[in-house]
Image (cartoon, rainbow, N blue to C red; front, side):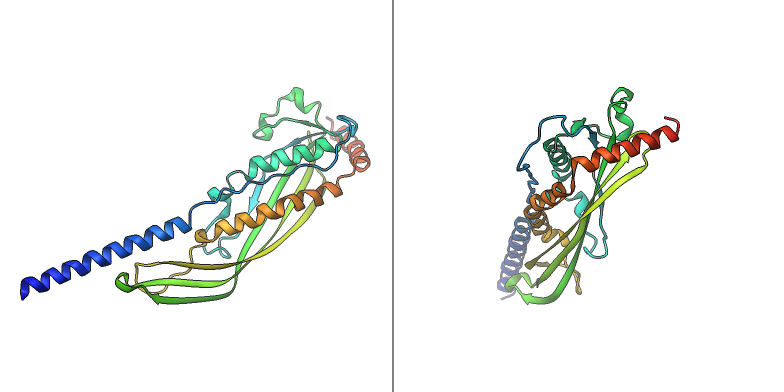
Length: 252
């Protein structure tokens, strides 16, 4: 009888372990990174150089808030791995389509050669702010057979932010012009993941950050098109004259 009890206990332990591994593998698959493709193609193009202003595009600055994303930072998430390069390429395409000259890319301001700086009018810096907030959250602990318990969470995630583009005079780094494009979208979430510790733990934002990246991917062309509508060649030429006057006053 004792041997039989030990055998049953062993079988139950094996089943519990196998079920736990299956749940862990399922959660891992759900959290598989979706690497978003942020693409933008301008609708129309002016003659190259017709804008009469030269730009270079700096690396993007990211702003987030760990409190609203439960400690997960989208800025370093693999889902957003292509964002910086896409912003540089998309902004270069946008300004080139307006007839402006775009030099670079350069990894940092310090790596722009002096010979290039003499030809560049404006240093463009894109800043992306994204804040994700859980709304109408419902958290339940469910039974999962031999494996014990799993967390089940449903609700809505609200994402808000801005894409801000700043133009600095290339030599003085004085701010000449700035525009912000608002970003707002929502998506539902419904996630389950294994309960291996004791007590209640908060949702891991990494499990739903895929949808956050997909949402921005869908919004991206519209954001860039809105920015394009705000870029006027005549205004840029006026700003160039103001920047040149500023540079003279600063002794450059």
